Length: 318
Ligand code: NAD
Image (cartoon, rainbow, N blue to C red; front, top):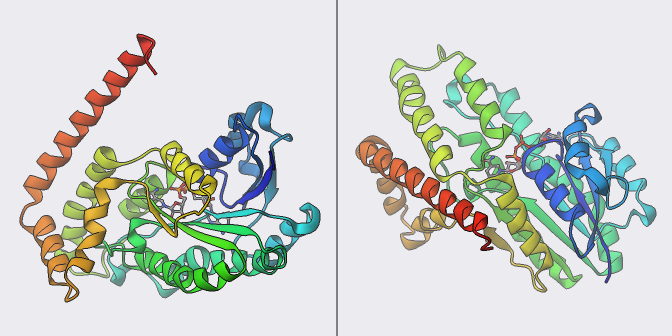
């Protein structure tokens, strides 16, 4: 069986770490993983999780997606610069009222989530074209398809990369290169923790009191409830990504959380945008009690399902 070289960005935590370990421990040994991270002093968690796979099917290298020199050094260190699958995972978040965010903070999000991916693709695409083979994967988000209140800049960065990939995919196909966008809903990782921590510490004096109140008392509370009710694990997203990269004709888009599919379909069902804006407005400002009850019910159902799976495993069922 041919062993494919997979380079993943942002592997010190979350989805990147889970995916690097999953591919490196593949029973069929289909992958050689180059797990990259901005800061190598954070490699301990990945090394511990990789266990025996370390230095066999998994190597750790430094790569900052915002630094062209570090990207080139990393790729030049790979024999023949040969990468079969590039997984752009590194990303950063930002939530809150835009009046409280500086243009510099906003640019930093675009630098990582948009230009970071563009830099990576620019570096590997010529080699993939020469070999007439390759797969470029981007960990996007359902927020690459649908804007969410108080996620203005993060959503813009994911829309930008979705538009970029939608343009590139056709040219790439001519060279037998596949492009795939993985679109998770909420995933319980450090990402969510970091954005919530930053939001709780932020200064809301630059906005009016009504906006600050909506953000802290409606958005932050709902967002936490949504993550604990509907959030996936990084391992779930890694499993979905494995399926995408092992499919003979990989899909261009793949959503990992079916609950979000109707939400992303609203704008296509009504091109005027009225169905989408009405639905979100009512869900947030009119029926928020119903939203809370539904999320609570989902949490209980998921907990029961988890207990049943544990019970079944104890009884020897797979
Ligand atoms: P995470 O914070 O655990 O992982 C993000 C990783 O990117 C971190 O290891 C971080 O160090 C790294 N990173 C940030 N800037 C970098 C840079 N300049 N160069 C290299 N690495 C850098 O969060 P996660 O949830 O695992 O996020 C992974 C991806 O999934 C992101 O692109 C994110 O937008 C996307 N995503 C996350 C969620 C979620 O709810 N957590 C949902 C949908 C999509």
